[in-house]
Image (cartoon, rainbow, N blue to C red; front, top):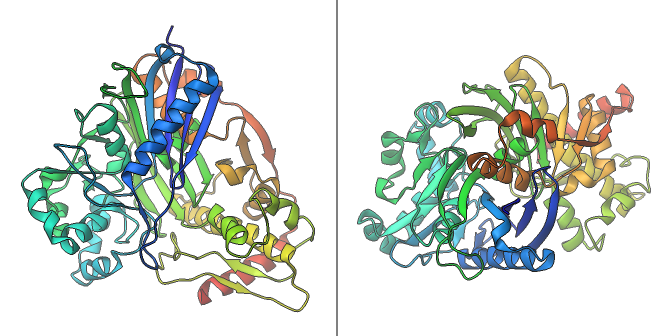
Length: 492
């Protein structure tokens, strides 16, 4: 009996495979990490083969650890680190270059060139995005420009481009399906938000051959079946696909316009469902496709903070203040406040609403009395303050504040961080029973496509809250902290 959905969450530092039951409970989980490559300052790469091996290992370990026969898998849902750019040979499936990761800033000069040519207003109008190295389009432009040997095979149709979802779908289906979903396509700078198709004018502006591109499909659809794998049998439907942040919004059951979530992972990402029409931002946020399910398209406003959990990792790996990321909360609780220390975690620039790729991390307010605990607390405050800025920008765009913020991701397990977030927002923060909402969203999308669940109402009824954080801080604390933060951001 097929009573599980296999969800594959391919992230920036590792791949997680989960088995999800009809009650949305996670019945098994395995994570396999893989290395990051930093060929130059500001450049970040992944080896696509190492990504693929992490997927194979995670799925194998999951099925072995749970003693689950593959026959019990009804479908596979994929979710992925967005914007990361992969180029491979159609004939062999072999990558022709390391993947250029979403964090990579190597295409900054191309973005500046396109801005100088006056293209940003048109790009913004068509895609809802800004010209920033974050997105896939300029990464692909860089590959074809700086690696001249790649251009002719690309023009001849011998190469395939995709974000990580496309690469995994290709591999899972034995090279039979070159496909992406609307949510991932909307992050490339190449898809028109209105037509949900690749835009010829944008392809010309970025000098990208159309024959490189995958087909764009709904987020919940039967894309193909497994074929020729050494870790899964043939014939399992690959049926759900969404970028990680859109998948998390879906996994949080934010199916109605006005519902919001924030995922605290390597970066932090705030998304709000805006319903069936795209909403243009005047506050530096992005307009993106949330998903397409059952013929209906939902859009979202998004604010991205490039560094969230990565700031804690820096305290651990770079400064050695803690041995594990989980220790940050214990250390930060040793002091009642940050002692005037402010940490702007702009370690790879500032994302929305500032969009300053040249910004750098800044720690201010250090005195002789500053301790590791003050720096730990300032780090958590810095993460929460970035989300406060995003929520304020989103409220300005909509004309109304959010009611409740749903949260997920690894750092959402940090109770102190979540309390700081509620205190800064002056709104409740809701954490679900299953914080693996990114993978859960991919499973839900796949399950809908194969009839594992009936509809959105059934899924919404299964979502459960684990803990709610309500505002407790005084206004004077909040105003003082925001004042110091705003001053520090200007200097970052």
